[in-house]
Amino acid sequence: MIKKAYLSVCLLLTVIALAACQASQTKTNHHNTSKTAKTTHKQEKAGKSNTKTPDQIDKEEGIDVEQVVVSISDDGFVTSHGDHYHFYNGNVPFDSIFSSEVLAPEDYSLNTSDIINDVKNGYVIKLDDHYYVYFTDKEQADNLRQENE
Image 1 (cartoon, one colour):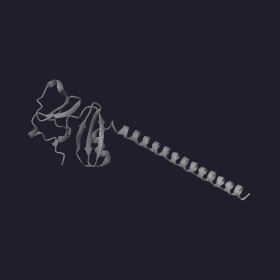
Image 2 (tube, helix red, strand yellow):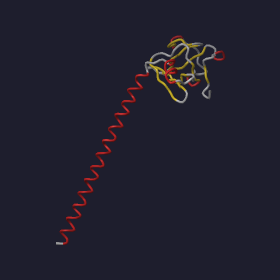
Image 3 (spheres, one colour):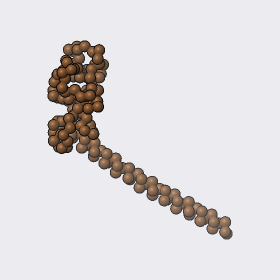
Image 4 (cartoon, rainbow, N blue to C red):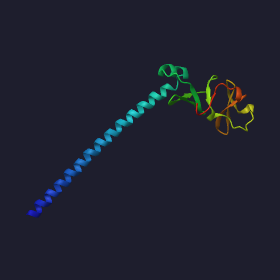
C-alpha cells in the first residue's frame, strides 16, 4: 500500500513538472513571436526612409554631419552619417562626398565603357561587379574624405 502511494505521488509530481515546463515553453514561444513582429515593423520603417534624399535625412535627424558614401551597389549606395549608416536607392548624386574606401584601384586607367554616372570631380565606375569612384584629379578632389576623417 505504501509503495502504491509513493508511486502515485511520484507520478503526480512528474505530471505537474511536465505541465509547468509546457506552460513555460508556451510563454517563451509567445514572447518570441512579439519580438518578430517588432522587427518586421522596424524593417518597414527603414524601407520608407530609402526614398528620402540625404539632405532630407540631415534635416529630419538634426545632425550637422556630412554624409559620406562608403559603399555603392547595383541597387543604390550607403552613406556614413555620424555614428550610423543610411541606404539610398538609385545612382549616387552628383555632389556626393566619397570615402577613400570606394576609390578605384591605383593602377586603373579610365575606360568610358566602365562609367555608370558622373559625379563632381569624376565618375562612378563598375569593374568586375564592384563599384568605385574615379577622380580625374585626386589631388584636387574636395569631395574625398579619408577613412579617419
